[in-house]
Image (cartoon, rainbow, N blue to C red):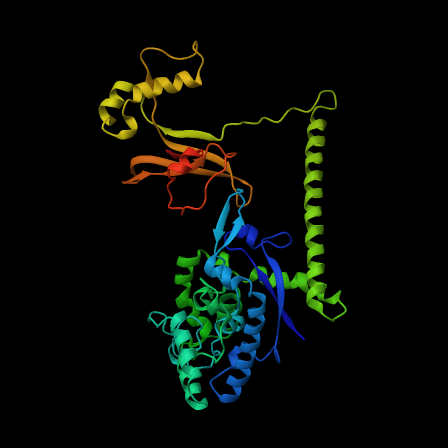
Amino acid sequence: MNMHPIVLRPAFLPAEIRNASGNGGGTFIGLMPIVGNPNNTIENEDDTPTSVELAQFKRELYHKVTHVIFRSLRKRSHHGDALSCGDKIMRVVYPGFLIHSVDGEEGCSTCGTHGAQAKHPCPKCLAEKTALTMLSKHFMPRVQEVMIDIFRNAKKLGSSSRMALLRDSGLHFVKNTFWKINNSSPYDAYSYDLLHAFDAGEWSKHLWPLVLEKVTKEHGKKFNYLKHHNLIHLPEDIENKGCTENYSTRPGEGFQQEGSPASIWTNFKNTESQITHIDENQEAIACIRMFVDLHDEELSKAMSAEDLTDGNEPPPRPVRCQDNYAVGSPLTKITIDILENTKGNLPLYRSFRSKLHEFLKSELDKDSCPRGFLTITPYQCLYLTYMSLEDWREKRDILHCDPSFHNRPRYDCVVINTNPGMSQKSEKPDHGWPDEDTVRHGQTRVRA
């Protein structure tokens, strides 16, 4: 039996990790059987009884499989589950599916909708087949609650009336698995697929053949097909989910190249568990290979440094800086008197002179502490370097403080942890600003 792999990729990871192969952000969780002839795709599905019967059977099988795979997520998606995050803080998280990276075939399966030749073929809206070429027209979106009501009403009707009702909404009589998982509307999660909808669809199957011919004004090409209509939903996907890299199917297609050899290594009986075991071994080998390559790279750098000295002197020590911040965009030096006279009405600058002296006394020894007349240089930019808890790489934030930054006021701020070893509370909602308990535990808000 032909099968498609199901790969779960955490949406909170950066795209370069989530979409990576090998030790990337994807986890192989199961195989989806392909029913019937793989060449009979949704492009051939219409509203005739025979086509609907076979397509509905495919959708039922699809959702029964996903029902088993995602069973453990249903209650957690509604009530949450405690999870230790990368910063060692326990948080209550609510799992859900915000993005489905699938082609048109699987898109109709996840949404339980009719095929490309049906009256309403789009998995995201109720556009009619005859209006797919109208990219400037607004169509009624598929709302999960409305689709559920249509399914419930269809259960109460006879066979012919049920089929008519479902045909008018482009739905199959299938109970969708994702309806019971919170924050997981399949119609919102279905995303524009640049690979299949544009590269291999809009361009490869439709526009490129026209370029190859001696194209005339009367070429007769009609753009009334689903992959062209999908362009109408692309701005919405970019606005809600970011750039198309976040929901590309290319990583999934790449995983099939990894999974195909694994299937050959099985005895073709109970292949799921065998492929999973092979995939775990491959991940472990890739992890070991990565550390060996890093070790070899460090040895190569050390040997190169030794070659520079001809072996007569020890290799130079690398220069390291402990400072994780820098300031920029300096203004003209001013005295403390001028600062207090111009900004003394602001709470942050009240008693600035005494606060500055107290700070200098605490940071400098008695002999180094400045006395008498002081001038200061205000800066409007702060560079903060830190280690990201997403991918453990070095990142940098640039914060600005300017009453007229490109003709608009800009006052950036960031919450930093000045005492990372201290336990912190996480029950309260994250509203963007630290509360009193958080501040007492060592988090400080810094403004540029």
